[in-house]
Length: 255
Ligand SMILES: [Zn+2]
Image (cartoon, rainbow, N blue to C red; front, top):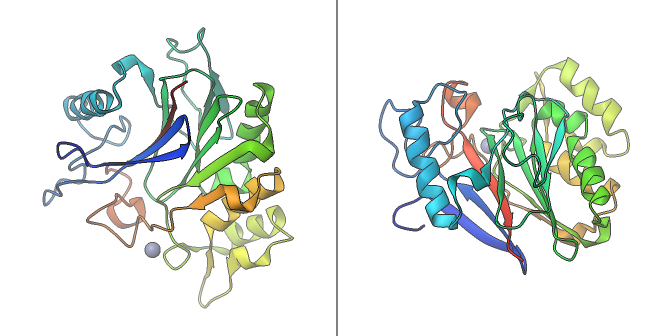
């Protein structure tokens, strides 16, 4: 916490910080209270800008160096470099990769899985929104491909899997189960068979994708925090509906 700004920050590698937001003060009947910068789930522009400004002050970066895409549950990854940092073409993008320092890349989630990656030596980072569609489609693997194109190596990548829905809270229909069976045939424990409906362990599925890409298991940190189990601390779309705030999860490298 910093001046009541509900942001948790950790050092992932020597030059890389990861951060994620909490709700902070929860005002009754205000599903955006108190920290939210997601600008496409019904919150007011004024509140979003207020929160963005406070976060950028905290990170000590200009407002233009906080990059968040317009997520659509796609598998699209965008590399942010010096030519694209000022473009507004972040529509239909669900993962960002960059090697720019002092540029925070971040994703908004409320039950979906935020995956943050860093290769400290190559100076390359990624922020990924992995909902169930992105997890089945392995958007994390696509982001890692982009990281490798910038000089990263899987063995050097460290990962933080952030606040997201736990298996007990994530009940799904048969059609979703079937897609996970096809995507992860070698890890049946991702699907928890229960009646009347199955549950999915989304965080473990994301972890498995990272391991399949060559990351060392010891380099993958799981938050093990459930968004839906903790409504006074985190936003949950399953609990609150989609017109609500979002948890922001981001990463920034300083060289
Ligand atoms: Zn839960």
